[in-house]
Length: 196
Ligand code: TMP
Image 1 (cartoon, rainbow, N blue to C red):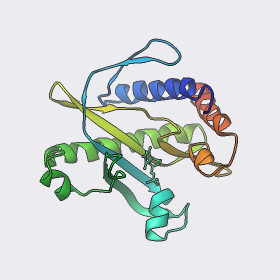
Image 2 (cartoon, protein in one colour):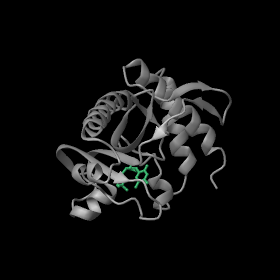
Image 3 (cartoon, protein in one colour):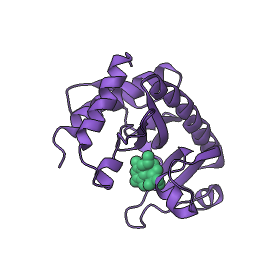
């Protein structure tokens, strides 16, 4: 248990969702109602994790033998099927359409939205001295539209200090680096200082 992490993530995620909405990304965000709760639009979740990578890290580094921190020639977009039972296996477009999880038109839109979110968040975090290494997004269907859903926080992004490469995200927990909440609070403080 990391006490009060939910409060920090609620604020962080809501600030990012509102910023992205202003920049033209449709999101599920409606209103923050208290420290730990937020109203969001009701959606039918697309059971995919959409991962964008700007720098090699995590499972990508491990799977392909690319040292963490290596610059990539192009951005990577990956899909994983959301299934605890199956261990969220990586899945490609033809597999997704074959089993009816999403249509090709939806996948094209998800990919375009994820890359746009990457551009906006990379710029935003750069202003705060933070490098956006990679992140995971989820989307939902509502009223014939795809909306950005779930949360965007240090639990779902890799965020490194731009100067020192110090990790400010869930890898502090995953790798037992200590001071997990300090990293999250630092991200929130920097975003607030930049008036996000
Ligand atoms: P990975 O390197 O472990 O595949 O993770 C890539 C990014 O996606 C990283 O920022 C963490 C995030 N992520 C989640 O938020 N939830 C998940 O279940 C997984 C596997 C990754």
